[in-house]
Length: 114
Image (tube, rainbow, N blue to C red; front, side, top):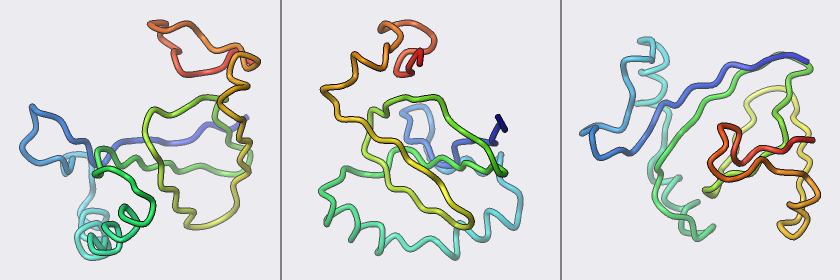
């Protein structure tokens, strides 16, 4: 399978005064973030979805054939597909044991062994 690029652009953390990780963003990306991000729209989505505040914003970029191991996320997610297509396989929480998750505390905690 193909790998993908992932990095976190926004991370709320007590040790950081500014959650935006400008040091990993090029000038054009930073400009796009500052000009193109509508905090008002995000607030409307948060309210409609009954979501909490933005704590993390991750960027994923891949080519054809990329995949992620089956896993679960601890937070609510808002997903934006810019180009191409993505196939999601979603399982009910009660089926989690059938995905053979790694035990809590394991380096692959929250991921499936399948």
